[in-house]
Length: 330
Ligand code: KG4
Ligand code: ZN
Image (cartoon, rainbow, N blue to C red):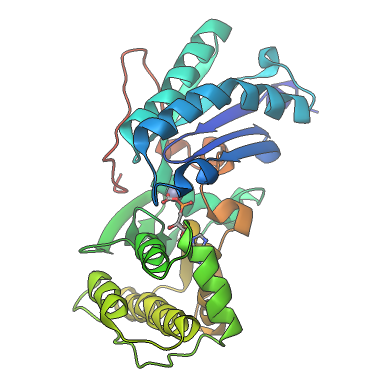
């Protein structure tokens, strides 16, 4: 085997929110990934406490790095480069990963690179897949706890054509679940409950359909809040039915307007079963959705950019800092 290629061992670090995730990739393949979720620690507060999240990242990150290396029988000295999330995310949690990446790379005398979390999500369906599978032009939908973005991918650039005017879709899942007494994160809980109720819109929940490509979820959130219900489960099923419908409407509109036949979806909400079912039914397009472990936040998607999109990674200078408000446009 080519010695040079064999040397390409990259460690990726992701700490943009409440997951401390470390991945090791060798030549485009994830050989280990450990993600430590802090959900238990934040649950009692009903949401993420940034300062607590940062402290937990600092407390756990070195053990996770050691564990991830151990899992693939490698040592720090085997690393060729480190890549870390630059933003968007919480400033103090991003800084933990960024500082660890920078100082470790400095100490090991290897290169450190930085990448955009949203672009990581956009390439997540192609983790462990051949680079040739990535379409040059595609509608790209990023749906997470912090973002709802629809963009057009052209080669390695993204042009945002719409985003949410208020709450992100994952955020509204979390808020609605909390209003009805469920724990954080609400997405997987609502997904399950709605699935058991055939995803029906029992209560005629209103579909929001703004002109153009922007999304809005606050009206739907208020509808849930004000709706007198007898059955929580039916209310959640109705909520999910139209929350997802809004995404489908925009995808269909983008297919027509931009005349594209490829669709990429990424972000925590892309794990949703009802969404996946609906996408499968759209036979006018080829769609790419990440495996569930790569839908929610993970370091592999950051490491994946090192191999799949050199244009979207930059070398880190020692004076660089994180960018909490980074968007997707390149
Ligand atoms: O991408 P992600 O892990 O973190 C951010 O970058 O925000 O997304 C987390 C979001 C949470 O709001 C969570 O409730 C939602 O993704 N989520 C889901 C599902 N799994 C996670 N939403 C709907 N259905 C799911 N199965
Ligand atoms: Zn994310």
